[in-house]
Image (cartoon, rainbow, N blue to C red; front, top):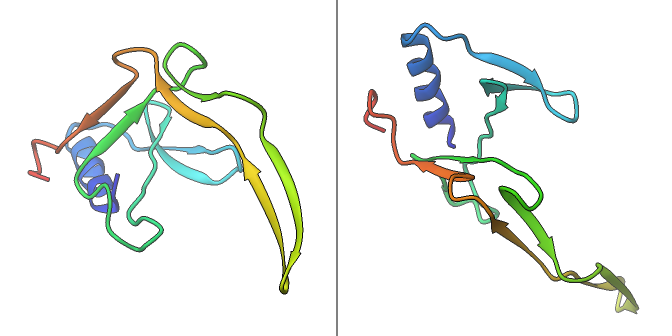
Length: 116
């Protein structure tokens, strides 16, 4: 979700009398959470263009049971040596993502109280 959507979610939670949680992520950094679930903020893609401006996405991850990553074979790395002034390496990895449960991923288009 975007920072604006996170602010709207925080305002909605405060309006309902709910506390905003703070938990530590896997690197020990403090992040906001709702019901123990980490809230991630993504605003721009690698080209600097705005994404996820007014949507909230939720996923439940689980190997073979919810949202899970797949791979067909092992990751292969081939050192192709030095090309001009840099080293070149080819990495091949046939990977994908699958949704195994119909309610493992969801999207909330807007928050009704704030018209976002």
